[in-house]
Image 1 (cartoon, rainbow, N blue to C red):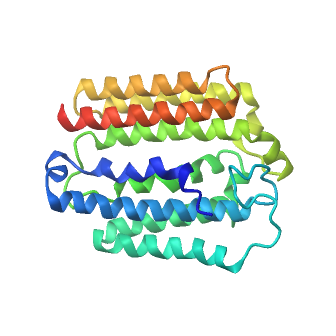
Image 2: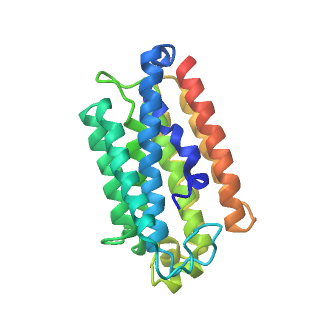
Length: 263
C-alpha cells in the first residue's frame, strides 16, 4: 500500500544533515534515526496517496498495488492518513524546523497527486515532485551551521532527482496520456526531455562545484552527476534505464557523503 520498496533508499536522506561528530555520537545517531523514521513515513504517505490517486490510469500492479481497483477499502485510506500523522509526530522531537520541513513534504505530496494535482502540469509537476523529497535532507540538521558539504549534496541530489523524474515521465507517457496528464516529458517529447536530463546534470554539477567546501567534494559531485546522466541517457528502455539510474545515483550519493564527511 505504501510502496516501501520504491522509496526505501530515500530513507537515508536526512543523514546529509549530520557531520562527523554527530555520526560518532549516540545523540547524533539517535537524531539521524528519528529523522529517517519521519522521512520514511512522509515518503510512505506521498507514495500511498499517489497510489490512491492514480489507480484508475496505472496499468502495473507491480508499480501500484491499487492499479485497476475501483473501491478502495477504508483501511487503505486510514493507513495513508496515519502515515502522514506519524511522520509529523516523529518530527516533533527534532525541533520546529524539522516539523515545518516534514509538513512541506506532506503538502507537496498532496498537491502533486491530489489537489491541485500538479503532476498533470508540465514543469510544476517536476517542481512539486522535487519538493516532496528535498525537505527530507534537512530533517536531522543541527540548530547551528549545516555540515560543510551539505549544500553540494543538496545540489547534487536535486539534479539526480530531476533526472529520475524525467525518465519516469518518459517511461509513463502512455499512462499519463490516458490520465490526461501533460507532464514535462509529454510536452517536450522524449528527445528534448533527454536533453533536459543532460542539461540538469551540467547545471547541478556547476552548482555543486561552486558550493563545495573543497575541490574534491565538487569533483566527486560532478562525477556522480555525469554517471547518473549517462545511465539515464542510455539506449535502454526508459523504465530499465531508470532502475539503473537509481542504483548509480544512490552509489554516487553515498560516495559523495563519505567524501564530504572525511575530506
